[in-house]
Length: 352
Length: 192
Image (cartoon, rainbow over all chains, first blue to last red; front, top):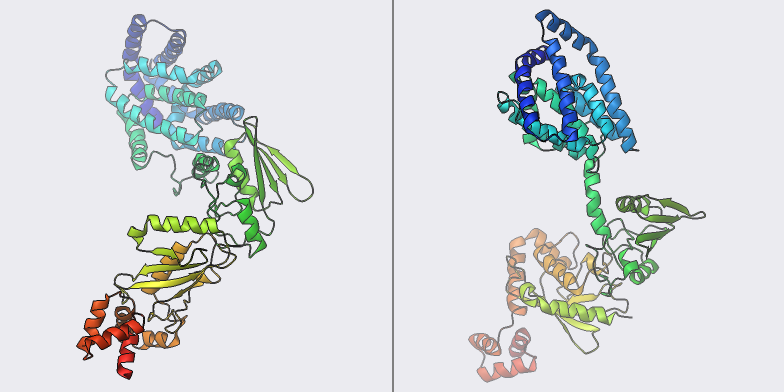
């Protein structure tokens, strides 16, 4: 049903769009990418025109689209899949989430199937981000009749983009470009109210709820999705680690903490103290002054030193601190962590 | 060995915000092993308006051992001995932490005044009264506060005792001989 409305809509809107697009192209100084995109777009428009030649043909094409749908979707997903694997080594969760987000917005898939050639070629050019920007400019001026819908869709897209930005780390702007490119042909099709209305309210309402794709307590949130709260908390821990919140003096003896002391975290409660006071306590009852829980029997000793900009942390006989240090070091990435546990020291490196 | 530098810093810290908290710590002698803490009675309790003095003796292991504290002002409270002024408070015993300070300990004592724990009493008589006859407990505690925890001037003490029917000169000498203690003076006057 949706595909029906799409093709009908494009039948009415497509010719005028082409005229406007041509005018625009003559007026504008054609950058290389723009012209490439223009060509692609023309190809696509001519496809649409072919489809719209007759009612019979339209029905046929509908059927064809319908039959191609699952196949195309697979191809699309494969494309995305491949790309993501290149960029993200451990991104299986994210990959899942992306697919999930695609299947949540069926329109983008429908549109994606029409723009498969478009998509794949642009992704090979490898500068999707800037391309999509140009498309926006060009097409904003294209269709006056669809302006209202454009605005609505732009809002929806903004929500969409925010969603993706929340899911993806900021450095993967290439992906965003691709996503946008996927989305824009959809918008060409959805000049009609039907698709826009079908799509927008849902996306908008989601946007109003919150700008996140899934809130942590969302029931629809896929299980495989990585915990974003944890990821977002990394910078905070980073700050914590970089002695922003570390007290300047030992709360027990009131002496200043040196670098070793300030990197010494003997208890999971986060209570910091100097090594001297820690030793005195361990000689006595051995309970953390902060939480009154006994210190781990395997006394944790952390030694940190700055070597060529990187921080080396040495842990001795540590078991409970393992995860904590691991997490903190992950956030800093450049750290070389040595775990001198029992017999053999384990050296873990986190590449920057 | 007492960490004197820490004690010194604690005293400075206490002095800095003495006005806001009303809690004072002063050394009794020069060596900082014996101190006197002063806390105001919490508002809304029978101890309101009183100023309570606490003797503090620093142990050798301070701050890894708790300071020894006991009331030198007489208090009617289930967790404070009405005889010796000994305080039944976990942070002064097994729940002490080196992260606590003299000031936080005094704040805790102040909190103990406003929320007694009669199920873990120091003074069984007071605790029983608290449980069985709360109104009597309140009035007794208030009377003790009025009597022992309020620093009335010498003239006020004299006036009170003169009102009871003793002679002015007699009262003054009795107060002087009892070291300013109104009740002791009264006892002396009564015993003749």
